[in-house]
Structures are given as structure tokens and as C-alpha cells.
Length: 286
Figure (cartoon, rainbow, N blue to C red):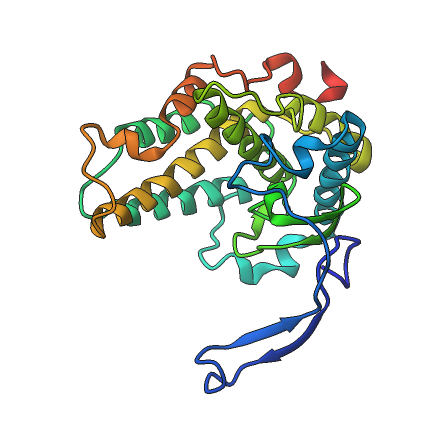
């Protein structure tokens, strides 16, 4: 990233492949000073993001979207980073990513304990497949502001790359928007207000188009897809909690997705996250 883009990643100093030193391979990077939007307590409720001015939060949003624009500008990403696609087939990058997501879900539920909601969600993906798949770019994968360090409300370090793959740019853009919506939804369930005007999909799409020259499309589909991805992760976590006795078996397995209500609303087109067909084609086509 440091060689190919302006994305602020910490400088890599050394790689140690001798496992006898710490028991595993490791690398050493420069220390970066900055602050991170917290998950607990949610940054939308308290802390430096919530306490910032509207202008400061707009700066955070715009500079965070710029990270995605800069990252996605790498040329020939699919070929350059082919090693990130271990199960690569002749399918498009988007289709391959959904195939891999389904493979992960099948692995988490290989003992037969499955979520009807997630199963129905995969059917929804196929029935509503985007008419215009975006270009293939290097996708960060876990593109949420909680994976960045900031100084003066601008990113100084971009972290957590283990979900990087080749995908359309809308995957990263929608993941950033969805993860903020997740925190907003959790706060609302407790009668708390957060930062509903931050990281709105339509606003982010407009900024991304201005920075990159590419107009994101079908964002409602990508927002729903990312909700499905998150539901699978939470379903896996729930399975581990059952295994270690940290929770009891729920009456309905769909409750283990963690976002049942939110995902069902997205599938039905009634979610407040949905931006509608007029904006789903991109800001220049409203």
C-alpha cells in the first residue's frame, strides 16, 4: 500500500519467519500516534467522534472515503494481488466473493445447525443480483472507521487487512456505511440517539464519485449483502459461545445472527439504511 497508494499504512520494518523466536512468524511496524473510534462504548454515543463538531465529523467522513478511493485506484488489482483469491474461478469478482461467503457459511453450519434467515438471504442475493457489476479493485474488506487511527479527524493509519480480496468498490463503501448503521441500530434499541447523519450511504457515494470518477451503483444490494456477511460472522460467534457455555441455545437460531431485525428489514426494502432506486444507480444518475 505504501508503494502503490497514498493510503496511510504504518511503515513495515522487519519480517521474522523463524517461528522459534515467538512461536510464530511476525512483523514489526512503526508506531503511529492517533485515536481510534471505539466499539465499546460505541463512538457514536460518547468520545471524541461524538464530541466533535459537525464540520469535524464531515472531515472524518470525507477523508475516510478518500482512503477507499485511493485504494481502489490501484491498476490491475486482480492480477497484481491474485494471491488473495485462493479459490479463484472464471466467475466475476463479485460472484466469486459471494461464493466464498457461502462457503464460509456452510463451514460454520456444517453440523446441520443452520439459519433460515441466512439461507433466505442468499436466495435474495441471487434474485436481486446487480445489473451492473462494478470494476474489480483491491478491496480492503473490513473497511470500517474503527479500523483506522485518526489525527485531527483524518486517517493516519489504516489497519486490519485480513479480509482483503478483489471485489467491486461498492463492497468497501457499503461495509463502511453498514457498520456505522449497526452501531446506530444498537443504540436505538436502547432508546439512545447516536450520529444518524454520519456515514450515510448516499452522501458517501457522492463523495466517492467526486474523488474517484466512478459512480457507485446498486448500493442497496451491497448494503444488504454486507448485512448478510455480518450476520454470518455473528452466527459463527454465537456457535462458539454455545460451545463454551457462554450462552444458552436460543428458541430461534436466527436470533444468533445478532442483526435479525435489521437484516429482515433490508430484505423487505423497509430499512432506514435503504437509499432507494433513484440513488442506487449513483449520484450522477438520480
